[in-house]
Length: 332
Image 1 (cartoon, rainbow, N blue to C red):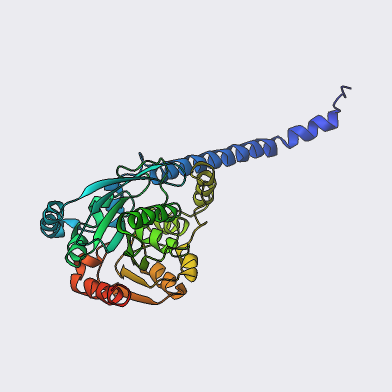
Image 2 (image 1 turned 90 degrees about the horizontal axis):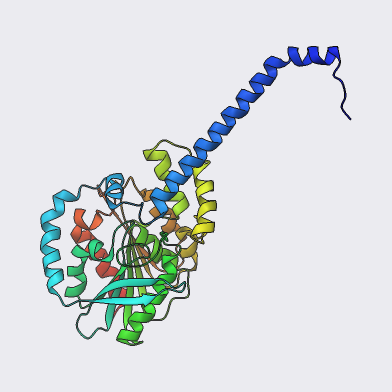
């Protein structure tokens, strides 16, 4: 039933009118903040996780490595790499994606390395220089295009969390091609480095003898938080929790669901960690934390003055010597 408002009640409403106006303004302000946060999250998510929005040029700028100084060195090695016989390989992932790699056979194909590239790169880009080392030492090379990169299918980037499962599929292809007696290394750079470290926690097939991770990170959540803080001077909240929620629904995994620093506690094969101490994109602190947790035999190389993914170019001799030490102990 309608109740008539008394004179006193009307007076109170008038007196409190300032409060009501302030309350409405406050709610509008909160709404604006929420809307801004939602817009910021969607913007961040699309530019980071979706293949058509994540750009190589932006990644290179954020990483800060001056690749122009190595152009001649890379060009020479690229010519020699491309002169080596190679062919396309296609497989299907566990979730039905068509994945691509390039196969460089060498010798009797009884030694092989499966290589995983960095964020927004592709298989034929990150191992141009290292191809000379591997091919000269009798290793066949499988240069993988990770999901949502290169010629591989996929809308959402796996950030190692999904790529580690794809690694098992690639290992199955290698053993099918070369036989069960083949001796295999996993080598990853940046996001690929995270992928091979995360794979160390899986039940790897017997042919896998060792893992090399160059500037790998712990988890997408931690590296995104670092980038937001150090490069954009923004807090992780609410962007990271909101992006994590979206990614679970869209891509099927959480941003800290798989963390390399946890997965290496289950590692069974020897691991070589390599990192530059001048890396501002993936801080060397992550390398130290991962290394401290490795359960299997381990080695570490910290390259002085090397920026992100620059270690091989900054000190080729030290890098190859570390590889020699690992490989000499696990591959016959």
